[in-house]
Length: 177
Image 1 (cartoon, one colour):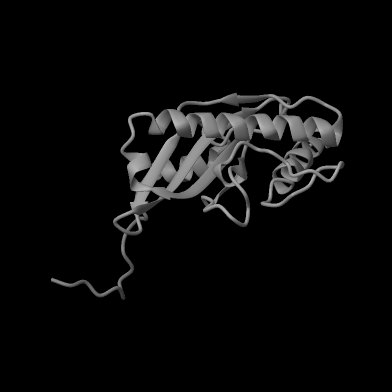
Image 2: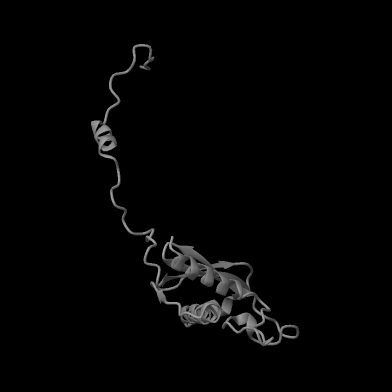
């Protein structure tokens, strides 16, 4: 792995680590990501517990978002659009925070739609786990795990496998029958 790739991955990991609930920026103000936990007063209002984390998979960044929301919000016809908006605000935060940390721009390109799993916890509340994959720009020397692999098998080992049979059984081998 090159130094440039290592720097990109470390900067992205630090940007995601700076997104915990209650995080403060350099001026002492709360960091705004665009999550539902930021709405309302932290003590007096009922806040929605939600958050995100990231996984690096080859040259992809997988954003995992989870939230405990009300069932009526899931039945809303705009629920998927709301999840897409939340993922877009998380990606925007990661880009902005990465630029503050490293001084360089980060390219995150969405690879498809958001994938959501909704599970019931009660008659009123549900647990949502959503994922979205983003391609990280600038990782030229990292192989994509989902790409088909090249055949790197040794010719003699391939020849051995093509024989296909292990030969005759030894005489002391008991056969059932």
